[in-house]
Length: 229
Image 1: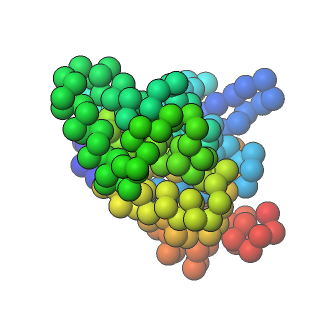
Image 2: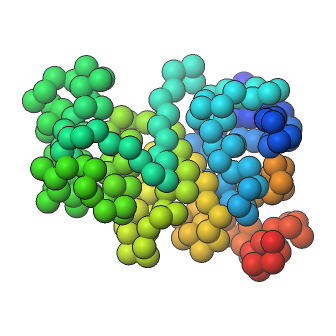
């Protein structure tokens, strides 16, 4: 029976590469319209889990399935890539691929830039933007595709505090189901509604953010929160 509150299921998913098992028999459910953070130390398996969910990697065993047969997902990476075109033209391009006519796609792109306070950059070459501006544009570009689930892989890892705060606000303000990987405890506290804590390729804990940070259920989680892991 389908659970209308669940966006994505993982059933005993494992992933192995040349260095061994990067993710071990993982069963999870990601809730709809929640800011879920996959939290853990560097090398814990966060990005592997995220890429499996998005379909960039195929599991070595187990299954992933969405709540619907028709699902649209997008992913934002730490270092986004843009065409040698203006900010507006980069946004137009993704809408053109969807078959949207020029007048409408220009309007949608301009409205998106205005919504996220980037109208001043409309004619700037996208590749000349600062790191923070590129990440904002990358997130706008992803949201223009109306994703059902938005995956974010360490989206603020190269940003200063001001740019990080701007991007976090954008993430919190969207009503899209977001799944973000980070090792930043303070960021997880600011953004997350739900936490999946992972270490050494194993999911150790799944809980609401307040419960996780105030009453972690595992010793590993406690050590990580205290900066000892």
